[in-house]
Length: 242
Image (cartoon, rainbow, N blue to C red; front, side, top):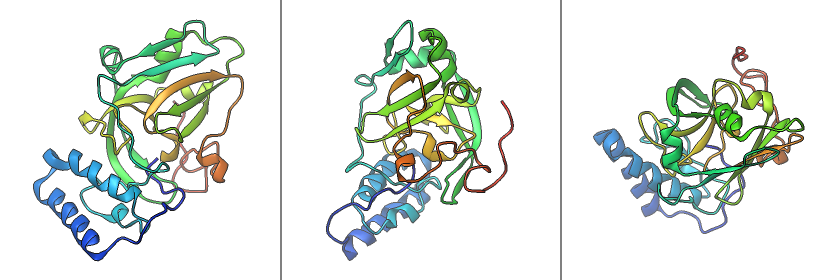
């Protein structure tokens, strides 16, 4: 989630660090998207260690605010990445990034909306429909919900089975026409288009079919389990059926 959780422990950020980070943001604006992926990672890494939250306000992040619930930004290479599908299914499976790329792809362009109020319009995500992976796994009769786990070792999320089977819920490996960076939760993340962005778990590593909804990381801190844009916390317009 592009959202701050607990404050990171550490020393106050000095003036040189602040000026240096601001300079990185300016470079991103000046030179555009070719170097933006690398800057996203640098800025997010600094942000995870910055108790001021300053980097969340920088230009050059594509409009996103970078926050992290773990101590650092986790990384998996394209070749090392694995996604497991298990739980109440007939055919558990493990997928590589190459496996996911070889499947039928879906592209969504939606506004990304954070429950704290910021929004990034017309953001493109591409990947595999979650329901296609569930169909291949064969959800058992008692399976009514999905639990998502992440390779940062902290983040988790959940959806009902009906929510997970929507046509606007992706296992995404591309964002705005490029691979999802580590800062944005890559190489693979969940994207739940009609819900606030905290439901779109970063660094996705596990999809487990369960018999009931298990609240995720942010729900334990008081966030809504049902995070529909416009219905959760009274913001924006209610989603259309899909």
